[in-house]
Amino acid sequence: MGSFRLDGKRALVTGASRGIGRACAIAMAAAGADVTLVARSQPDLDALVSSIRHQGFAARALALDVTDSAAVKRELAAAGPFDLLFNNAGVNRPKPFLEMDEETLDWLLDVNVRSAYIVAQAVAKGMVAQGTGGAIVNMSSQMGVVGGVGRSVYCATKHAIEGMTKAMALELAEYEIRVNSVGPTFIETPMTAAAFGDPRRRADILARIPLGRPGRVSDVCGAVIFLSSPAASLITGTLLLVDGGWTAQ
Ligand SMILES: NC(=O)c1ccc[n+]([C@@H]2O[C@H](COP(=O)([O-])OP(=O)(O)OC[C@H]3O[C@@H](n4cnc5c(N)ncnc54)[C@H](OP(=O)(O)O)[C@@H]3O)[C@@H](O)[C@H]2O)c1
Image (cartoon, rainbow, N blue to C red; front, top):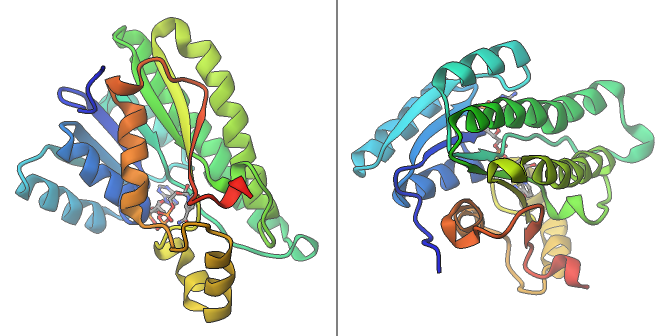
């Protein structure tokens, strides 16, 4: 069986300044990877780099707005090549379908789809040039499989990630680059603080999670490390749901 460790691998993690990306960056570093952390907030990244290094692991910060495609291409070419990518940066602004505005529509499509695509392409080019394969984990959601009230655009973006993941897996297989996605349920992070902070909404969410508790950032880390590791060496083009059973119903 292949190892679950990431020793000797260089990993890029986007959306690393807080929430799921932050937790997974720490976990990937603890699993042996040298992690490069991307987000816009330089102070948050610097604090995280210090904390990871303090634990004896390797990390560096790369402050970047992933919607700035010219900067993404330039900076990732300079900072790479990478062996692993956790393509995680993403946003949401829930709104009823009939009230959705174009500014929100464009913002979500830009961050969640267009930027994820450009980041993946930039990293994959470096992997291909390096010639030693790689593993990419795109951040999807259970909303990449099912619908959600107030989440028409978010669902569209995560369903797009599912299509992108499968097509990337087919095209990059010849370079031994595996491409998968993870699909969490509602995880307690700054993104979901408003939903979990509303008692009725929290109860609605928990009623739909058969395992009966909110997701924690740590719940996602194992899935990301597994898909990034040699233990998943024949797994590509698939979605690993971390949804407490939400989509099983
Ligand atoms: N929380 C959930 O319940 C849940 C469930 C399923 C899937 N997801 C997905 O998981 C991912 C992370 O979610 P989260 O809950 O951890 O969100 P979060 O706590 O709001 O963190 C989002 C991260 O993305 C970064 N980011 C946002 N816009 C960016 C930009 N333009 N350029 C660079 N970085 C940017 C943020 O950093 P800066 O603000 O510093 O740039 C932050 O590090 C998202 O793709 C989300 O859709 C979340």
